[in-house]
Length: 100
Image 1 (cartoon, helix red, strand yellow):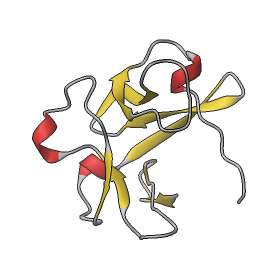
Image 2 (cartoon, rainbow, N blue to C red):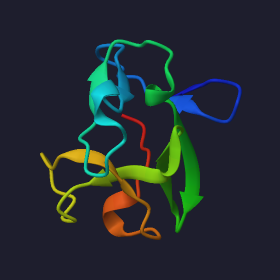
Image 3 (cartoon, one colour):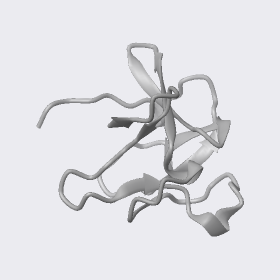
């Protein structure tokens, strides 16, 4: 997690150095699947991290009502992750961080 000094973070892959971002072509449509791409310094790769119910909600800096969401609600390995309107801390939009 790299802070930008303005309250947002870039989420950077420790393996590839790529950043988690919303695709440029998406127009921030709910349900857009996010991906890892080369860092480019745009708002699409900036996130705000808010504490919620003992975990964290990760909000898109460009549209704070959109959060990272594990699609399907099951939170299983391999589930797609995308952006979705915040629904008050449902299980599939809460994240925790653990050292590896």
